[in-house]
Image 1 (cartoon, rainbow, N blue to C red):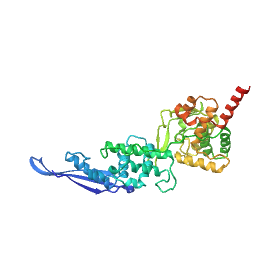
Image 2: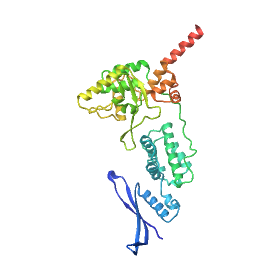
Image 3: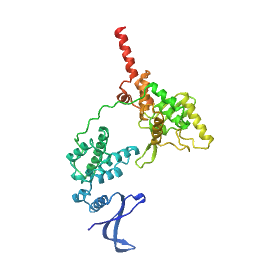
Image 4: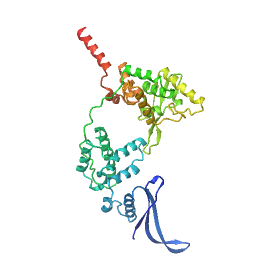
Length: 391
């Protein structure tokens, strides 16, 4: 039996590549209306991806139709490059992971598309070639920015590649993972940047001169230390106006297609209730009344002029604009308000376990990230030592 395959381009909206694969099984004698007739049997399959990927998939379909190993054609296998396989991996081998995680994989694997390494045939990729690639990232990004990548970013790129190649082994395309035993740069010690108590008070004072929407945004992140996406996902229905509490149970993030998606908090510890000052509750209530009086949507606490929910990057942009208007305030990241909340809680004598629970972290994670001393804690420790030794 001779199996033939045909590939036909099927362009999709947005310019995405798509191909229709037809497998011709040949003619078979079948019984039809009491008579034996010869009938042609064909099957079709449409896939998204490059033509090279379609050719490889067609060869696999033909091999299976003939009862052979679909990955037994070395000539076809060699045509798949690293960047081709990475696309297949993202499309077919990451169905059960979060949108934001898949978006991170896509970003990290895109460095191979911008490098000659991505054009190397998958079964010819060597450990030595990958080692040279990762060493080069310390000098310059392959994306043409000219800036070297941080050790943390390089490790994320390697992690995504290692996982992709592990799936290639399971698919039978390669026998060994060339990303094994790569020498990676040391992580380096992480010390969270944070604002001191006096600086936080200065931020709140400066925020009083902002519009209600922006003042609420700044007060929310300063007083709670919640994650950026958690603040965007906070709804008016999550606010207990009587008990001055917020229920954190949603997290808005950007998915791999750039659209904002809503999901549960980052970890099992993220779903929590936190108590906040009455001043913050008053701002939330005032914003809710403003929206309702103008007939605007009053679903999410943080919203734009028309009441639509904020995207995470919109919140960061507002924060940067606020810092530009107030050069007297140290220009730290929005996420550093979260670090500041943890340090403030520890300085006020709150136990690490309670502080971590308030921020939706584990105690171990909290202590690893915030174990360094602030100037205020150092001064207090010095005074205690002096009192003990000198009386």
